[in-house]
Length: 169
Image (cartoon, rainbow, N blue to C red; front, side, top):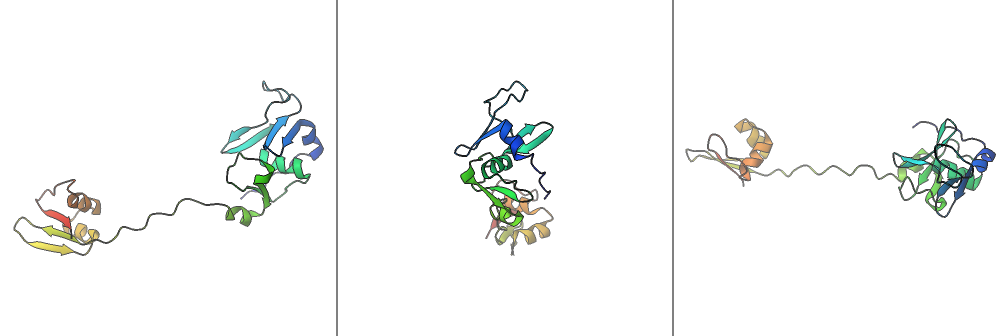
């Protein structure tokens, strides 16, 4: 993960921005331009985070909020959103953490589903011969088709071209 850029001096931020710790809102104290005026909300949402444009720099609102409220630049540490809502910058939702602490609050992608159960497959040939395979994969290999095709044959979604009757045993 990249190191965050240092924030502008605290005095500079306090001259141009106001922070409400109860709501997490940053508002402009001066006219920032771009059709905005003093008193307007500061920032725009990008990738779930609120970013504030100050001069030629984009600053993350949660880092600015921490700085304005506590008076210390978070520096190389990260500001974690406790409730995982990246745009909720209330001070009660922010905490200063290192990379390990930030990962501890990450739920990550959902776990992958368990592999399908190995179900025996019964195949009845047109001449009446009956054969039992231990799994869909072995039946597919013996019949020269894909395991999904075995599933479709067994569920009656498709008929085997050679007239085989396929079912789960």
